Picture (cartoon, rainbow, N blue to C red):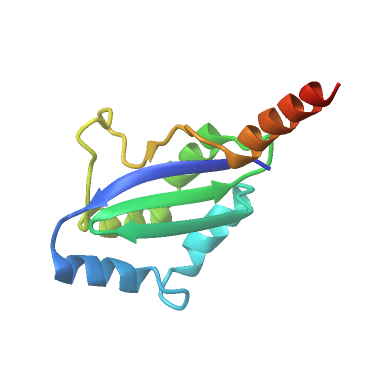
Length: 127
């Protein structure tokens, strides 16, 4: 299952950041939001913060349909209400495209891939 990573900034305001975190406590997230995430096939999702920068990890199936998730969210009034509420805490990254909130991140290092190359090189050296 692939993992997708996205970044977004919060307004640089300690009180707003605390409120945002409070909204994301398990008992505070609206159940419709959790249902929307699960109905899209997302297996796991985590959000991490440092300062006002957020990183979101989504573990998705190989056939994950991001466009389908966006369409379903756009048609769901409760998801739109949540997005409007969250938008008051968030600010776009300077390089985000118009209308883009969470910006996809590109992986640049994988220990697993580096080990595979290292293991292959070691096997070749032994021959």
